[in-house]
Image: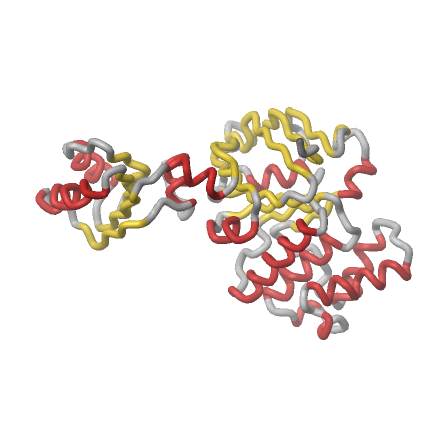
Length: 313
């Protein structure tokens, strides 16, 4: 049985009457890359903030390497943080930033310089090492942000949506780095609201919404939650109430409503031969449909089934 390097039990945090985390529990194995998938407001950033020690006044426990994370300050030196915000000095160059942040961990100077060179090569910034960071593109800054989180060779790396606002090439570079870090034995918690990112990167995926885990497992295990069903996406200029009223009139034996919002709905069919009858039912009732797509079961369908809404909401 794999030993857990991180165990989170019944973590709860509220901001006034707004619940950010509700008895949140999760574990992580050594070298495991876990993708925490959820929409904005699901509680992902609150979780990362608690684990990194920047947010207090919560209940529950966090055990790291068998010890209370918050009782031993030395344990935090074994954790790397890559926040959504850029955590570096724009007027310094890439090397200077890595040397500054690495110096906070009392890494010997010779070793620190060697590590900085290695990381800049890893994140493809070696040729720009002496250039002020303020001249970097958004993707370059994101890659530097990741390098800073790795400067002290952490045993646990926390990344809070590290690919926000960057181009596809920079995003793929960061996802490659995350995969490599896991293969080298560092455990990773990677938050995102991008389905493709966790599909490409993570051995295990946890779907999170409204402060709690709704489902977790490998991609194949999660897809089995939906089962061998065809998923139909209906789009148009209709309200959620209008669609719901019409679809309730349909003899939906074997049909499951995954989500209904204004302008879009998702349905799952155990028997695909029922789909034409459903389409005819909608058209006969003059529902203003602009598009209809039939898809195989995927991670998006799982998310819709668990939360009743899409990641765009």
